[in-house]
Length: 292
Picture 1 (cartoon, rainbow, N blue to C red):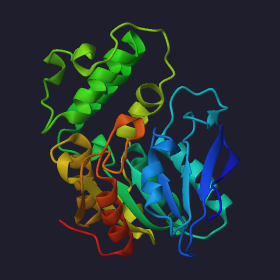
Picture 2 (picture 1 turned 135 degrees about the horizontal axis):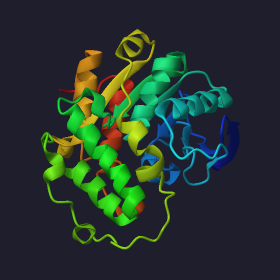
Picture 3 (picture 1 turned 180 degrees about the vertical axis):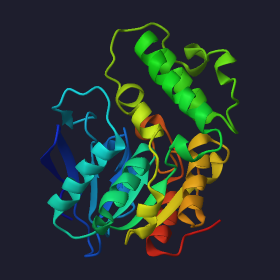
Picture 4 (picture 1 turned 30 degrees about the vertical axis):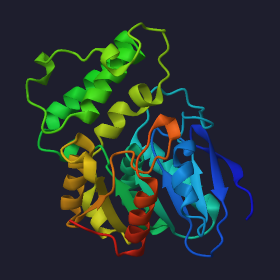
């Protein structure tokens, strides 16, 4: 098999690096995207699709992809523009896309703008607060995570982020009166090292979670869209958002094995059920994996 090729692409305000893994077959290329997770997070999942050309990339401001515009925050629409340029640079026609977390939000923005570039999108747990019933509370929590990071540093900000993502059920209107989670409870440092370049808590936190899907454009797009959530994620914010996005599209929610990071096979020290996840993803891409 040919070796993975790393390529460079200049876009508006960023220089992207992306990887192309040639497959043994001649089918539609498969683009795997996250945000702010970089390409290394898809190493295990990509290995289960050796029959397809698999493309991964580092989003702007993450890993090998540098921002050149000096901006402190990024909107999903900017990521979508990057993805348009990347897919066009591949020159392979419409691609299939598996998009996870913030990558799923960016992929929805991509399809709303240029659905002609995507044959099938599997959007896994897109964390958009705009579609959940506790919208105002979740938006407030997300803004507070960002503000805490800017004010107190990475440990306190990440502790609040982990409390946000792991919580089961709706956020109450008086969430701000709850005690702030301790960084030590998550094994995180409490001291502030002065850095403010974290792409999750700083660059993408507010733009990603406040994105409102353009349902009329998504329903009108030629793209087949499958929205998925992990079986173990039920009740969590990103899974609840996935169910609401599926409802907005008028499609069933696909239930995948494991949790929010179910495709991980040890990347970042996290483990899901990557073999089972890949099987479910292949079925979804083939049109046989939708389930309620």
